[in-house]
Length: 256
Image (cartoon, rainbow, N blue to C red; front, side):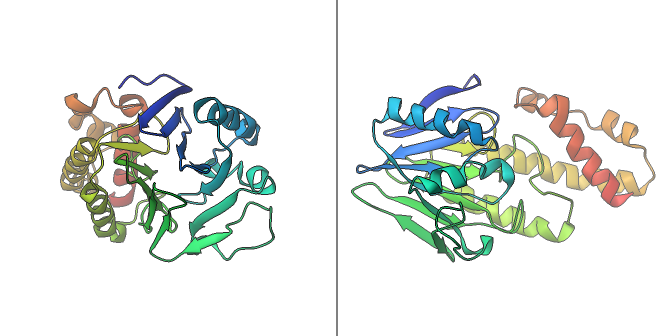
């Protein structure tokens, strides 16, 4: 699907996204709307609410934070002061003062929001991108929000840690187990499970080659020349101009 900045898409019955560098997602749950993630610019809070009113015509009642990075939580205090219930994983911290944007509801492994016939399932899959990561499944629409567990080619670790590789494989395997036709990332275009599968192949190819080249004292330029972006991934969002090189540098610096 072509990426058009700030375009509103309906991905399934009652499930919408404002597709952008920082995505905002919402779903109609009957008596109100649930929003997933709260962007990095608080000035966008009324913009998102206007989009919701135009698309659904119902009030925002719940906010689910997939993780606690600043580019996913900036609108939290604004919406919390309006009475929106904030839901996130318990590792973020205990609930605090009403209206400050911290969670009102926390969960350990899973949480289901079912105010009516439609159910939203939240599953904790932390330990790779952040300690707090969760995915959000809109069950009736077969749409899964994976947040920053998929970054259009970028290795989803804040810094390289070889001990996290098994957990990363496990987490993405769990993502692939969902019966989801459409996946929503935290940033950029929507995707399918086939993109996850292809990225896992690419990741294993990097792991099989870059550490050995780094230990053999190959320069980063030599590594990049030997491992150009795969042809079938060249149209991935920001992959050629940024993310492939970022991955090579991360691994090269870790093993040289």
